[in-house]
Length: 357
Image (cartoon, rainbow, N blue to C red; front, side, top):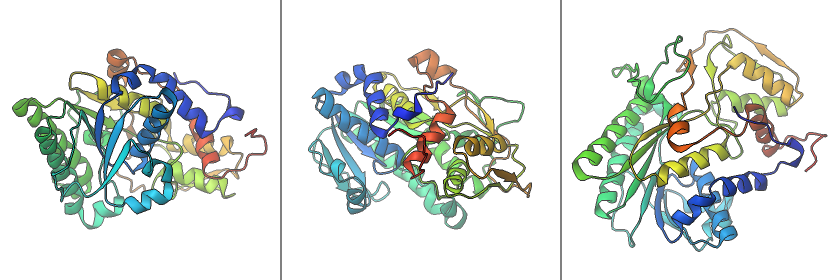
């Protein structure tokens, strides 16, 4: 069960300190190692880079990362300290049109690049599928060429498809219920195909690959203006608006805070064998109750459930079982949802009069 921290003492530095402490043994393992990363300028990559940056400074370790990105300038504007970090090298390129003539040797690969844009899925699904599948195969080929010891592929809980309502939590051994002839499932099917590529390379070439099936996340750095219920609810709430739930509020979700996510992913990365793990919270909440909790946490104007026809991709549950990662790697969820909401609201400019930071 996640625990709620002291809200009045929170800031982003406290999150980083929490990660550093929980991963103290990992920094020693990664000291002197080199990592090749894709998707390093996205939400998940940003948290991973910031954590390694702080570890290098705090523990005087030397963890080097080469980041493949389509826009160095855009990320430099957001995070100049990361772009200017001497242990980080930014390589301009794309996972699909990848020139693998890259200088240096690497111990680990973190493949986090993806196309998760809902508009892309609707309008040009082939581009999305191509980026996920061909991009992953390019990274696997590069890993073979460079004799990389361990690959971490960031997949998605979407690979399971529609979670049966009677199934409260999805375990890694459930085969899923995707309709492979429905282009709406392009993202999910792309991730499934990419996972198969990982399994093939592990069998045929002996490449060690671990897969993290990431579920819903909530925390600082996550855009709250995209099509994402929890983020949209927080956006409206801190703007003084009433939260609107367009559907009936019954679908169930769960949300993992980024500090837990980083700790879990790094433990998966250094695990010697390849395996598949769910990365997400197992604490389920309905969309209606999520709106209520956000409203209460931010003392907003309340919420209303419109009960319109819900056109979302998953009208049931989307909640993982985390028994495997808990039993195998000792991972636990530390940050409760209410605390995640509070911190996300503060990060996005909410001015709580009772906040002491």
